[in-house]
Length: 66
Image: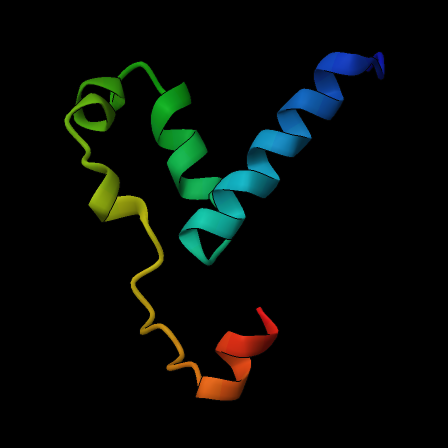
């Protein structure tokens, strides 16, 4: 396998998906790569992919720091 800039772009995309989803996006990537499941992937909504864990409530001091 040749390592080049395309590998960096792919890795960045996987990392970005992992941050958005809150877990490794392996199943989602497989869904898009498989021709038999691609139509199902096209109907997927963004809300179905986003991290569903509850957000931490910020304390007033935290808001001041940010």
